[in-house]
Amino acid sequence: MLKIVYPICCGIDVHKTFVIATIATTDHENITTYQTKRFSTFTRDLKALAAWLSVRHSPYDFDSDLLHAFIR
Image 1: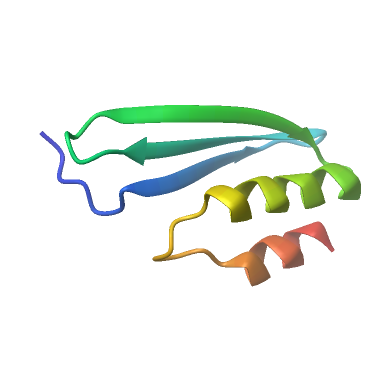
Image 2: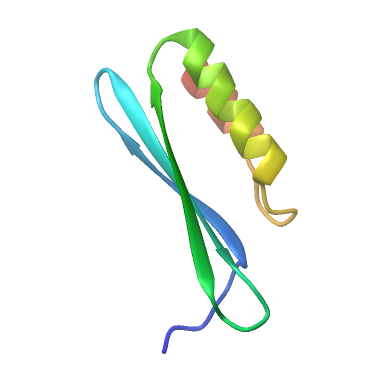
């Protein structure tokens, strides 16, 4: 069994015209749930991605500066 390092993490699959983000959340019983959402690569949707992540982010590691650099 894998050791849970971060109880909340996100993977982002980046394509030319869209990105898909999946947030994995593991509870105290080691049950992981996933939330997946697709966004276009237009600035409006990337800002929506940033907002979606900021509401659900882990307090440990969230580099919003990196995401904002990606939006530029």
